[in-house]
Length: 230
Image (cartoon, rainbow, N blue to C red; front, top):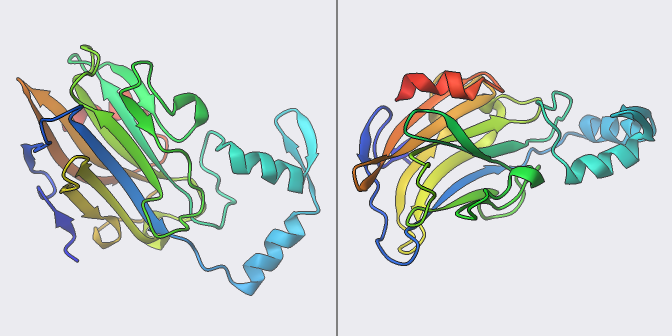
């Protein structure tokens, strides 16, 4: 497969979304799970009998892991040897001020308008379909939403050059047409933990997509960092 389908890195094109119903686009992220070695499996089992401090409470490691399976904690989990990528959407107004963050966490999964929503956190990459999705209904967005940045972060010990088969897409939900498809593993300089996929912005009455496809550090100050792409 080619590195990119749709506008190439640095290029901007009209977002050819079907002008019916909610003008919905689907942003997807997929990757393959890590094949754990016998030694890695052994280390996971050994760690299961240790006590750990979870917040202000001392819990058995096994209990803490059950909680973490349901709650993706802030910050990169540098001890996680499995592959865990997170897909996020940051929405800004016309002045470039951050308005909304939609990401895998339960408290950010849906914006107040209900027009931007996340499929939920996938912490393994298992399965044959997209691992994480963000839906955006462009037709009836709040008036203060002018642009989106789509971000991918590696919430584990692996940088992108170690992740197996990571892909990001923008799909027209009505026609299922791929408007932008980037094969992350084929990009250069991918030994980082953050990836700015694209910018989706309104120009007059049309929505446009700018293919950014650049790597960066984990947990940037996004409101400041993303200014250079406008």
